[in-house]
Image (tube, rainbow, N blue to C red):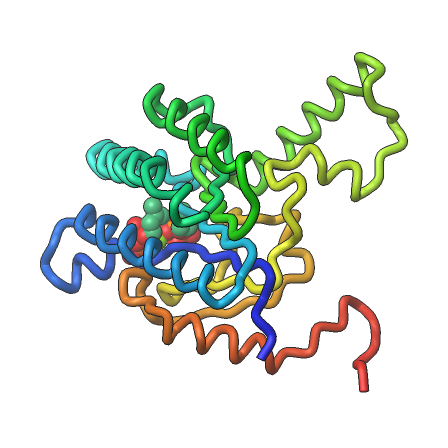
Length: 234
Ligand code: IPE
Ligand code: IPE
Ligand code: MG
């Protein structure tokens, strides 16, 4: 069984999970955060190198203010805890997205997780926060244009050099993209990076998505024939 080097997950279904139990949507986000912790540990243990999760999109600001506030509070709590334990657990973390719009305390925590992560190698968890695939491409184009204007970059760009301007610079593309929660859409996630990822959809809501569900996704991944536009290997 091949373990994908990079797994990406759209964390979806927290709200419906809570609603089914007569709980507020925020209880679903709290349960989803626990699931993230378990799945990240599991990925690390089975030899996945990168786990990238979609935690808050550029479109999620349109949710009720209370819900946004509760999600930000949870992120704050998790990053704070991660800072205390990540070095011991040997987990590197990177936040992908426009962090300039996040609270000062979140921004400080993000700086700290980056600092800690630069001290060692190994499993890396990427958390997409205030992330949008289109925003990422536009942001990369803007930075690239600035570098060309100042003479730092050549206008003769190619896919590889453009990738260096993305939030995901230096991270290989996802091999497997998982969306729990029943929806079959990309919702503006990793539009550039998923060009050749294998997609796996599951009806299981994210808070219920345990290691056995991840195993099913990896088994299915192993049944896929990745051709990258070529012909079937025999
Ligand atoms: C995913 O769960 C978490 C975020 C998008 C922040 P949802 O909150 O989208 O849950 P559903 O889709 O409403 O069930
Ligand atoms: C995608 O879930 C975004 C995140 C999981 C962060 P959404 O629940 O926001 O997506 P839609 O609205 O169903 O497309
Ligand atoms: Mg949703």
